[in-house]
Length: 434
Ligand code: ATP
Ligand code: MG
Image 1 (tube, rainbow, N blue to C red):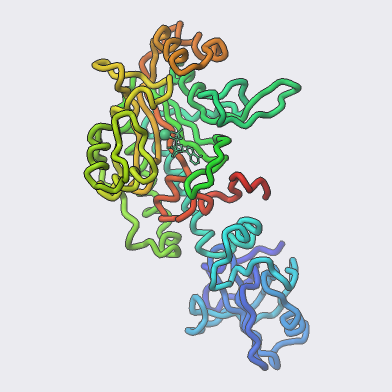
Image 2 (image 1 turned 90 degrees about the vertical axis):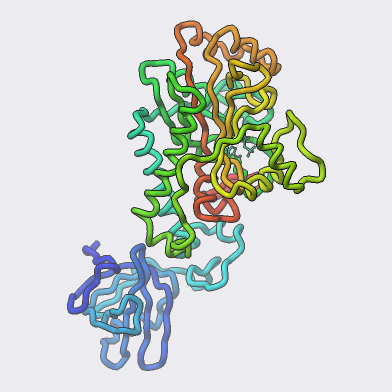
């Protein structure tokens, strides 16, 4: 194809060739305006019918919205046009026509329903506000990667097809692996621990996790992006500090690198980098605070997990990111280490956004005998995890880490109502295609 000028770079006086989608066609009789849209912006093509050859005006009269066209012409200043310029075409070529009936109109002022949008994601992503979400998602993932690398971590990738799940149980999607039963992995937990026990020491992974949870909520997916960290010679407090830095770096990158996308979403004034030093509430303090709000019909008692309502009540009371530490051991997984002082209390922590949980982490049980006991206490068969437990016999240092939900991070950063808005092709109970 001919070299194209990006719409954002068009200057008066130039002869340019631009390519993009037909966003809008306005035929005022005698003069027509075609708005061409591409990633960097919109450009008005002005077509005075009497002054232009039929080769141009005929194309315009047949144009359908969302067709891809290539326009060559002279740029002039025009205060009333988007971007303050317009193009008088010498030629207009239809590169890919669009059918006249669109399942979703990207120039539509009223939003289509989410299922319609997800079924027609290509068209949906031609809307600037949807495009902005995914530009910011890209910025966030890159910033998270940089943050980990600056904090001395090595990026790893671990298998998603596994013989046993991280925590066993009903949350696994079974698959057939050359006639053997296998599963889609629900978390890189066990693998990242195995690697934290190697000379790499501090590792991170950004990758998919699969959970066969039958929820239908605005914050659960069946395939999500997990941002995982595991560090040798770290305790829970160290892991919390790494996590806090990742969250701050992700926010700063959005301000530095994606401010236009933030404005497109109308968030330029409300978006703020969270102040460091996130509050660290113990589980006991957290349940007391929830009960003090009076928001629950039944007060929480020690040992309860925080319900969605409890998380919301506490989030409103705290008002910013915070950690909950010192959870009861019985509601944390077997690989979380108990505190040295009290074996009913774990080193597990959750990072909370006022709206929801973002991350769970903790120091891990690195002592082989205690690990095996933990399996047994949770009714899991340690033999099924022998590939994992045996490495704890050969010098496994103390280590800690966390798993942070990528889509939950983006959803809370951008005040999205539904987690599905933060994924191109979400997987939920109903949705398997596209
Ligand atoms: P929740 O209680 O909110 O369902 P969880 O405690 O089961 O989450 P973890 O196993 O702790 O989740 O996973 C770590 C992080 O991964 C969570 O804090 C969350 O951000 C993200 N995550 C877990 N499950 C999902 C899911 N189904 N959809 C989207 N994100 C998820
Ligand atoms: Mg959790």
